[in-house]
Image (cartoon, rainbow, N blue to C red):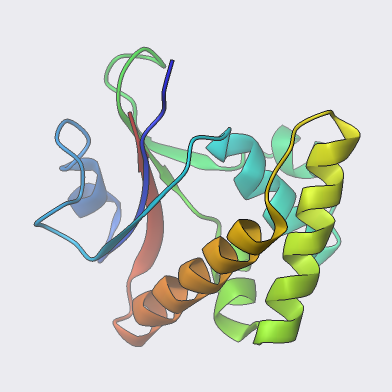
Length: 145
């Protein structure tokens, strides 16, 4: 089964939730990316950026679900945590490359292969989107279907 993942910028949860059925295209600035476990990735990225343990973040119900009308069986919208959005906003290119290397290494430890160059480019593009969100006093969200 293929998963479509799009990060986007919205002013608040209600506006983000409103696109759950059709996705953010044409409504919000967005970034499409590959097929991987986005919930796990959001936790891993925050863990790497902040030093907080994966288990602690998962126990805190990160990432936060904004809209899930089909209870995990259809499209849903997740909110990137404020610490992750802040870390992406503040990260320079060397830090993004470092985080992507650590992420690729973590995935490899679980026999999941990610291309290093694509992982770095994804985090660079995501950081750009996070900076856009911060400049608009908005939040970073993720839609998946």
